[in-house]
Length: 112
Image (cartoon, rainbow, N blue to C red):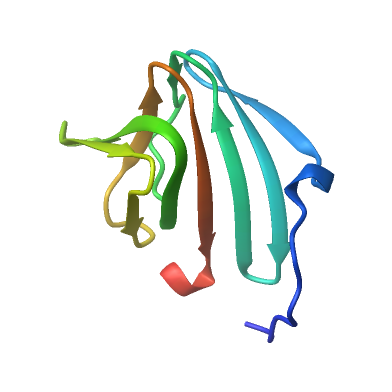
């Protein structure tokens, strides 16, 4: 991975993209730097991801709460200030939220 020079991110200036879930919507604001991706993600009320994700992430809950559900049925409730980490291809997971949530998600080559 290339060195990343010091920079600030003004999220109000980063475009949002919409991604439909099984129910609800996700709005992503994405910064890509080589093999590193940083996203501020907002899930709407009643959001259920439309797939089981195999990608590794560091996820930090900025506002609200959500359930990270593993494909084996385990569920973990994360609230404001909590985080989780998982490597690529280790635990299939998806996000679920009843009331909406705002997350900071970091992923990339370092989680392989």
